[in-house]
View 1 (cartoon, rainbow, N blue to C red):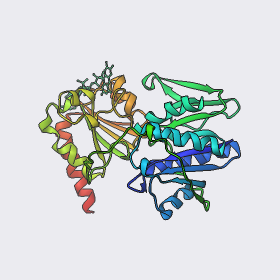
View 2 (cartoon, rainbow, N blue to C red; view 1 turned 60 degrees about the horizontal axis):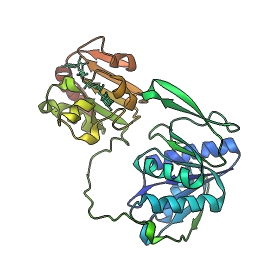
View 3 (tube, rainbow, N blue to C red; view 1 turned 180 degrees about the horizontal axis):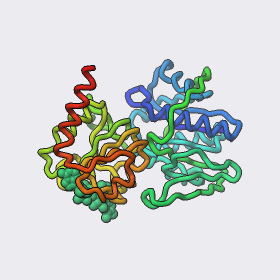
View 4 (cartoon, rainbow, N blue to C red; view 1 turned 90 degrees about the horizontal axis):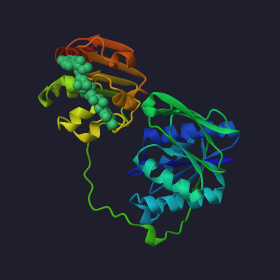
Length: 323
Ligand SMILES: Cc1cc2nc3c(=O)[nH]c(=O)nc-3n(C[C@H](O)[C@H](O)[C@H](O)COP(=O)(O)OP(=O)(O)OC[C@H]3O[C@@H](n4cnc5c(N)ncnc54)[C@H](O)[C@@H]3O)c2cc1C
């Protein structure tokens, strides 16, 4: 049973999430006594591809094609499915990000493969193949049994640590045939956000809820996030009100994140919000209501006014940084 992991690159560079995927795939392969093949689509130079070997990718397949410069769900699905068949992979692993959410279900249909979406742990057993995942907005867990010959796992971002198990990888540049009828996506324009830590990549997230009272009060929260090298987030009502952009909304209907530290200011901790943040390693909550449900999810809490505490935290972090 060989394992194929799809690793995304951004402008020819892999991000931490790709290395996390390879670390995870290597551990799954270890359970199977098998090896990991990493698939990269798009132009990535040899030195960058070799970095996948540090996390255990023994074989690397690199596919470069003019029709695959922009992510096209159908074309990418076809390429990945063909490669799964070609190398006889039995387990396919990809990220539970927007790309994985678009491609994995298509792949599941194409390969008649069972799929476990948004997994955050290694399979519980290989034979039978059982995977643990959170269910019902994190209020329950499920053991998924996959009985199909090929199995697909999408891994929740930030849920698996980087594990180095260096190998010297073999890189194969694979030629693929693209059915132009499948390529429906054209890239018209790119607007890049520079200097901003992506919410799904961030190790520290500073987040605000309706308890922040007004969009005008966000200054110290943003400053704290910047000082800590983190990203900003918010609860859904905050983005619904237009206080913060929608891409910052975390929860059941927003982004699902798992940073090392999630700081929640003026957030009640509704189930739907916690569904997106409860996998964080540490949650720190600041709330005026000592009975707010967020304190049940948090390891550290301050009962107090976020608007008074935030500027003090900013000053404290600034002072620490001068030491
Ligand atoms: C189908 C569905 C999906 C949903 N999806 C999401 C989702 O994805 N994400 C999400 O966030 N919500 C979601 N919600 C909404 C969710 O149920 C809650 O209403 C929402 O999370 C509450 O946001 P909040 O904590 O910012 O606001 P509130 O519930 O109004 O809480 C504000 C908190 O701030 C505290 N507070 C007030 N003043 C201060 C102060 N000065 N300092 C410190 N604390 C203060 C209060 O004690 C209170 O606990 C969803 C709801 C439904 C029905």
